[in-house]
Length: 191
Image (cartoon, rainbow, N blue to C red):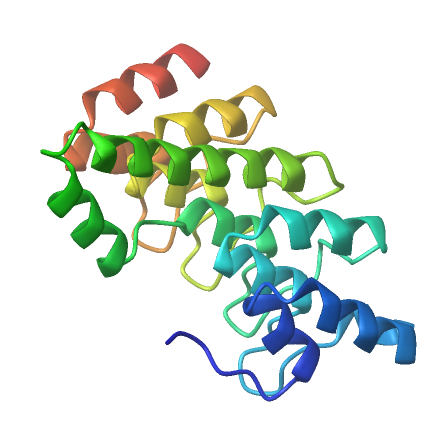
């Protein structure tokens, strides 16, 4: 279940199939930045939507363009910041939480993977303040997801916290509205 791409390399990237991505790039290296017809996603965006740090690193090593935007004007960075747990993740965590805190460990591992993916993308020449069709930047999405770890990484890279989205909200306004006090404190400190 998930996304179905018409562009084979995007589908392979979304499925975290590094061998198929490699084969497709060997046959035509220009496919590195191929955009899916319906979404405009590139293989790098697809890998970030899936949360695959390994594939994102591989694509960056092959000089994938981190500045390409899809039809929603989002870059790969937006999708890393938007990552959240799936329904299946929540179900596993809820079922396994009482059993030796296995659920907690699963949650921590997923958060660690997303944090590492964010570090990988931030190590490239990505536009940290890229604005999507809703006026949101990566820091807006990290704030919405209440992701302290991603917020810290974005603030460390000097993400602009004064950018307002189309609702007229800065990340600080959003954090106040959602009553995310720890994120409010982080943003005030960065201001």
